[in-house]
Image 1: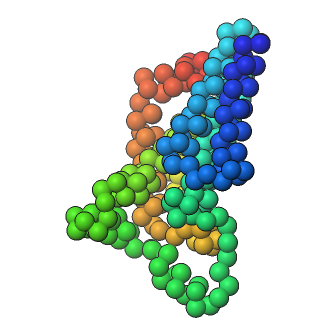
Image 2: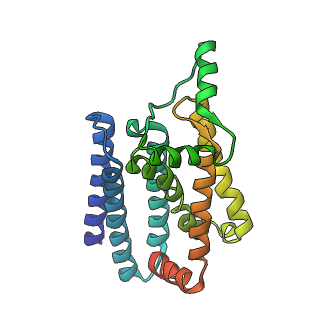
Image 3: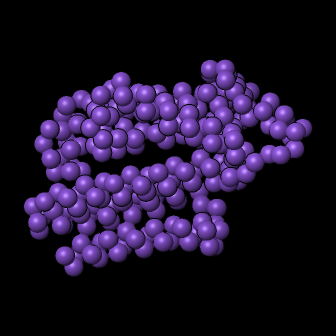
Length: 225
């Protein structure tokens, strides 16, 4: 138990560093820095849970650990979508001025599918936007919901039905986009929902392949399917 405690302590310490950089020191961490810190924290918790599993032959710690990793992922997702200044986010706010609100609606609301995607690609070819900028926005939106394809089916039995998962993975980015729009922390763009959902659904289909799903259950929960 002492070994597992040490690894839990390391994971917790990494989380403290993560929040200290954000909230106390207020350093604008690059996305890769955020991901690496939270990934290291998850690995530490996983090692601790694996040690407990070997000592007790019970996967209860692994199940709890999966919930912890899910919460850590949600922290990262919320941070990037609502509070990350590197993505043009400035936290929760509201617009009161009528003129400002009209301008905001005109520039921060897109309900035309593939309009933003085509603009990014066009501007990249015209050298108005860099390839890196386009990749961050398009590829970033495509992969950011992929972890839900792992967490949701493992944590909630109903999510193993593809129809249920598709509904869920459309609702989640829709809610995020609406929150961004209402709080003026970002834009509300149907293309973001399309990219988020498409990436997650493709990953879900890959993970649904039986050998891959079996490996995932064995790795994360030490269970057979």
